[in-house]
Image (cartoon, rainbow, N blue to C red; front, side, top):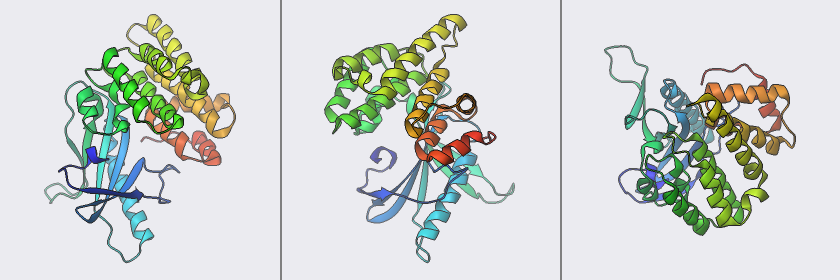
Length: 298
């Protein structure tokens, strides 16, 4: 998280915030305890498919939930200063602002509400993501505005060298391929990237069902829809199919037809990243209830 903490000051990571505060039974994306210059801090990170108009509302709402959780966790103790960062994966080509805000004060009164930082990773270059100094940021390289097959080949090699275990490499490659499916700049590198990972890992994709089955299937179907619909290449549908397989891994069964329909509708309405979060964060019963509920604006 060093890349998300400005100023180059000494940082000590203390651990994740483990709270019971949820929104529609969904946990905040990530809240990390830090110590900066010897002082406690909490960093809240939201991964967003796009910077929709409702993101300021969500960030303000989540900060309220997080503040309440921290107060309940240590009654009588001061709540550490909080900061939010929205990591944005796709959107307009024109530069996004560096900060956002949600004002709740009356017109003409001093500001009251929340500011948050905006990290539009899809508007970075491959070199900028590399410079952040963590293998985590390498998975966003397919989103970079200057991503090329040659650059991604180097990224695959760096992940191979940096990951501590085979399981960690599989997780990083999964994220890398999902980012390539989002493809905000229409680089169309997913097929080449799949081949690169297979060549480097000697069959890892075929040994990992969440990647092997769904990424290859989804990529092929996305190409077919692209031929039929011109510019509509089917990336979001491909991601939705990946989410369906993730559901199966979580619950030990395939989703029903109604659950598949709900996954698709939620991916369209809320964004695939938010649906993936729910699939990863919720336990089996809570996940089934969430898919059965009416879709609420995020």
